[in-house]
Image (tube, rainbow, N blue to C red; front, side, top):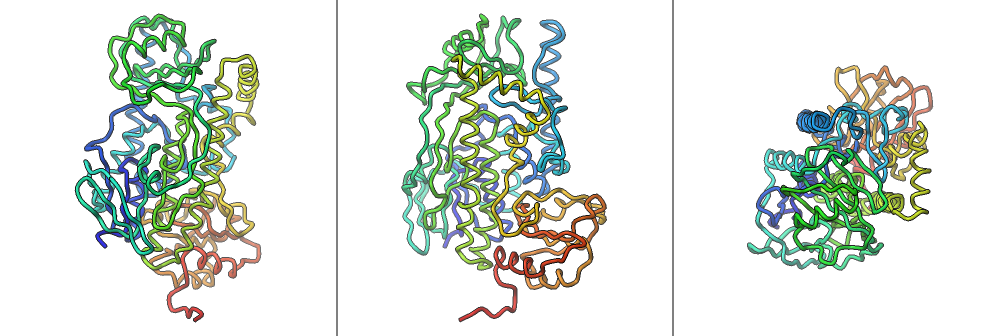
Length: 518
């Protein structure tokens, strides 16, 4: 074998997956047909689960710096806007946590006691990080880990059998144990492998661009619904979005021209702006599709290769990073002989429902954007709900991905959820102990019996004994490498050592020295 895994696609998802695989000891090659990061405007934010994932790998300082720069640009935009057109420009700002179908969600109406909203530690402060910045940060991390990232190399085909995959590229062939397609919505890997890709057809055409323009006095900041569609202006200088319900574009690959973009912005906004320069532009639709399974033999999919949907809410990037976090440690464990191949079945069973849920939430946003009377009536109702604590908290939690829970054995309320970022008596936080990509048994009551059970998993499960004054009800937590809780127990209740033993074996194989049947 040349490599254990070939990852097709060197965007954020492919790079995140490669880094996770490398932490697990796998030899990885990443193939990316572009020679540098694509400058075309894409997602401008991430959800908290993505911030958590990067935080758990020690990347929080870099994320915070990128967000600081983004907020500086936003504040400059608002100062310029207010200075040119007078104060009081309404729209997005630090008091906004996101939007549903362009309906802004106010931070002061969010109940932070909801799981996934108030227990994420410093990661909860990170949101405004663009896709290109994530890709650059992960590219640097891949270099640090010694991953072979081959830019300017395109996958042209492959042959897979029971033992390996031979990947054909524009620069020769590579023999690997596994192939993972992270090559986007038009995935070559998905098509060649024959994955089923059912879903719904598009009904809208959207454009997003960074432009120079004049005549913007009446162009509102933020998201605005009109009789002809929806448009957005900001939160960075020159950024505009148009949403029109006239069907998909006749030619998805045709260049976005200044004249067409200007005409669409005028039509949707009703403002006679003049676009003098287009710095970057793209179009997208709302077609929503998802493969029926994420694995076919030695070929797997992650990110947009496995699911596509509209870009509303910046959920696509975060959904893909979640795929990478879920798959990386599992595939590395199988490659390293630390877990049976059946562990990979949990990748589809855990991530497919999350992808299906995101597709439905993007579909629902399109429904609330339509300009017909019925949809506008629905939009008014959702807008009213978004003015309440319960409504905003629900919408924020779901859009933010904080409500994700995998169906894992065990009745503890933390089981299957992203583990809270506990502040510990050792002076650190939980995320500080997850940088190496290994599982963690957190013993909060100094229980030698629990630690003895995990002792046979050296190199697979780290053990930490510490206290957590803010959560005295917790006795112990088994945290998977992706940060999700595999098992937990409360203080003062009978601790199920059998439950811990079962969880350890379920996720990390048999302990060292154990005698297996046969």
